[in-house]
Image 1 (spheres, rainbow, N blue to C red):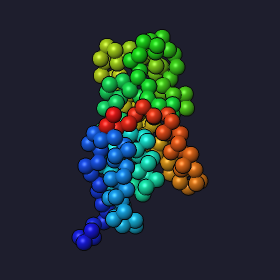
Image 2 (image 1 turned 60 degrees about the horizontal axis):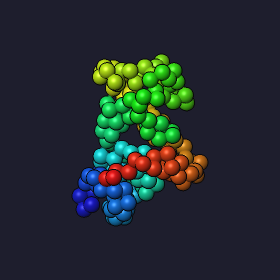
Image 3 (image 1 turned 45 degrees about the vertical axis):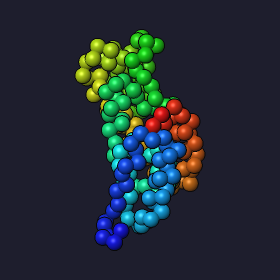
Length: 170
């Protein structure tokens, strides 16, 4: 901090430990960083940890998680993770999410995406990636609106319930 950077990166926290271990370490790091300069948390991409970090004062993130999940057929939704390769989606005409406006949800069914993923067609991973990145951008917008309206705690709770099984580190 003596160097007076324009912003501060926090790294080494998302390397396999559980969220219950990572968040106290994040709290300790944030306690010594200036509140009036950008704080960047490296390598964090799960929805619950993002909203928890924002609630603590983190401004920016980056992570491969949304694209890695997409390449393996896992889609992020308001209800939690959806594994598009599951047999139950073979004949589904539904979009991944009826409330999502991405090209994937507007144009392709769960059944078609499942087919693409099960035959290892590269377009499947691309379409799933488009959805996951759109969903993440929408999540950031929801976080901003929740901060502005004073409802961030409600959003934190909603995500914790929807993504209860998605806990970094096991």
